[in-house]
Amino acid sequence: MTTNVISLVSIGAHPTSGRPRRAEQDARAVELGLQLAGDKLQVLHAGNIAEPTLRSYLGMGLPHLHVLEQPAGSDALPVLSEYLRDAGAQVVLAGSQAETGEGSGMLPFLLAEQLGWPLIVGLAQVESIDAGVALVLQALPRGQRRRLKVRLPFLATVDNAAPKPRQSAYGPAQRGELAAHEVEVEQDELFTGAVLQPAKPRPKRLKVIKAKSGADRMKAATAKASGGGGQVLKGVSPEAGAEAILKLLVEEGVVR
Image (tube, rainbow, N blue to C red; front, side, top):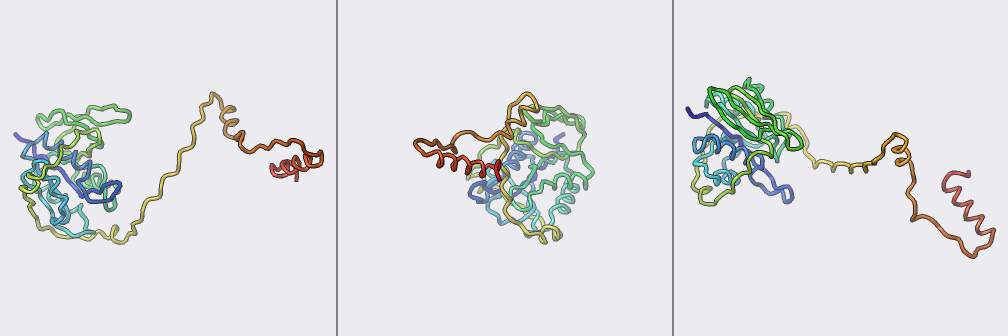
């Protein structure tokens, strides 16, 4: 019996130019879905069916892509959960965070909660599915993996350690079909009422001080940089030398 696998996709953005593209992690979710279900894979998007970027997913070899039509600013959660229930989905794959819009990364968690399904974060590979139980690998820091058993149905967010997506070909992208589905539109009041602004750059990391003891670390943290600000006095009178020394002591706060 073939497992009903559905991959969720969104519109991505190039990190440098900001131009629309297929989202990197969503493309990995499609690649993983193709390896699991082949041409039986369903790919689902909630948004504008006229978005040209959707065809880059079709270019991965998909015969069709399902689109739940809704305008920008709509809440995708209720329409996605209703579709997944009606479609009898058993495995749902998605990226961990959208590259455009709010990008909070909360959709998979809210979707799994609404469906009452288990959620696997950081999926790297699905090893097998047998008798309603999937054996999967979860990506951990430093290249480690954790093997998990999870009962179907379940939802998983795909990690960058998942299989690299295949290139999108122009021919299949144009031949593929975008299937529109009319859904009830619900406005996302929280998102539409928010003000979006560029994220502030992260502060620079402090230099790591390699010291064996707390005293050494304190000494390294409080020590002043040597060199670069010194002044050599040659051939000056004692009065000029004394004046220069006094000026330095005042600047350093030794003499007030």
